[in-house]
Length: 305
Image (cartoon, rainbow, N blue to C red; front, side, top):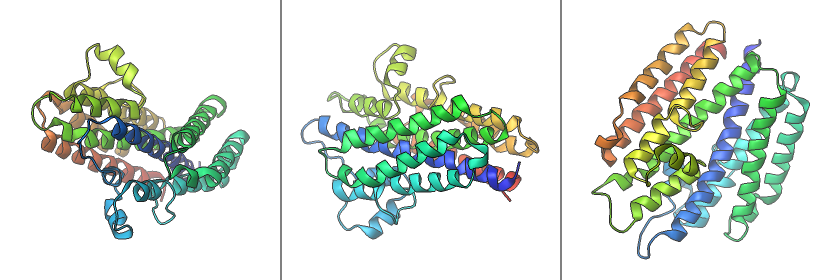
């Protein structure tokens, strides 16, 4: 398999996942703020922090209000991680890799791009935001399902799974980091912690599976443990890393690539959610994300150069 094809399908999968996750974050954060107790002060500018673009956001926008934040995350052509740019890059990588992908994948991704181009500016005000972003999420999920159900599960598909799960692990860790402030102080009496962590679960479509698995109320440490360490939930960091390791094991020249992923997995298993506060959890998330970068670097050095 040519390295350029492997690189393209890997990045196609990462950017499809990134677009879906960005839409999820904006939708969930919108409803979380609406339901917070009166007088609670939580700004929109936490979202660029989560996505790693706060410095660029601050340089481009003087006002860190809702409209500017949503525009930066969804429609700003100068933000390389915006939803529109993610879809455009995914589409271009798909276009140049059509020889290894099902024909309907290109058609569906092209339709997603056309829909986003036509409707994303309508998602900046609140009125139609939820419906438009939900439609984008569903189209991303349909594309993921189409690839899983109609593409030969060969090395090209391995790189798609690697890209999707590495991107998913990174975003899941960022969602946990966003909720880390709720670990400050005791379990609160106002219900704010419960509300925030419930929103984090809903951002990842994890609320019902969390209740099924944990079978108790929503508590910070239990949510952190579920989103980071659950072996069976598809969006947990542990499950995503296991999927990446499984795919790497099927590829040639994979031996050295397993070292950083196993190091990340060991670090993850050593985290004790019930013993963490906001600062120590943030430090653990930072170390995990450094590990994700190391995994990507080793993949790039092994197959993309």
